[in-house]
Length: 315
Image (cartoon, rainbow, N blue to C red; front, top):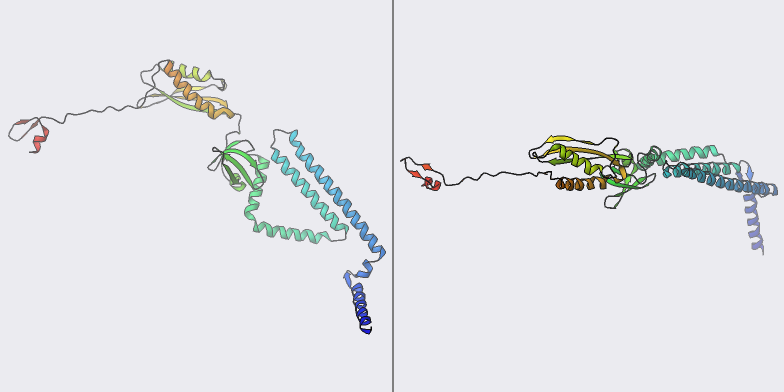
């Protein structure tokens, strides 16, 4: 019986010591368990929940409104509004977290300083990743390319399928997925074949030296300009550009819409060839003339005898 009483006395002493222990700035556990402290904590929790609810609501609303701006500004890339919407949303949530901590009496100044120091350390450790993010921001803002453009980045030629903060996804000519880090996209030359609505197609057509150049020029012009994809403004350029060994070359430059450029350029080669054939304009091809000498030649030896077989001169 005495042992049990000693046990409970020990427990009581331990509890009394714990209740009187200083926890935070002269406040003990017994002070925190008072009705006033409990009501104050409940009020802080309710205020924190209200701030959290308000922060989530405002951040979601602002993010959706910014992304919805893409419906009003269709000439701008959708990725830009998605990026700005996410930035606004997470910024509001970050301030919401600081307000919640401040509600419980936490000094947020030191926390902001700690976050800044941690951010610096993380930035140094992730320089390559952050360079891709920075390049992604520049691509999204300045838009040297956008989703759906036909581009060449380094040695990759294809259609842009997606642009994120870290990488750009391109489907090459064989429809193979190519993922290019944004730092390599922004830091290199970009050829955007879809950047302008019109492109100039260029061909070289050769005719024979005996052909009537005026008829040949008219045939080429009529064949190309009869196609609906050919633009008459700017004026087509069709002139003799070079005198080759076996042909007179016409340099032809005609404008067309950028989205039909490749098929248009291929179609016109066949169309002009058929038109030249139909109008009897000679299209030359390289030829070579070979002179064959009879191996049997007349050889006069030292005695003055004639030998008709060159092989006898070796006897």
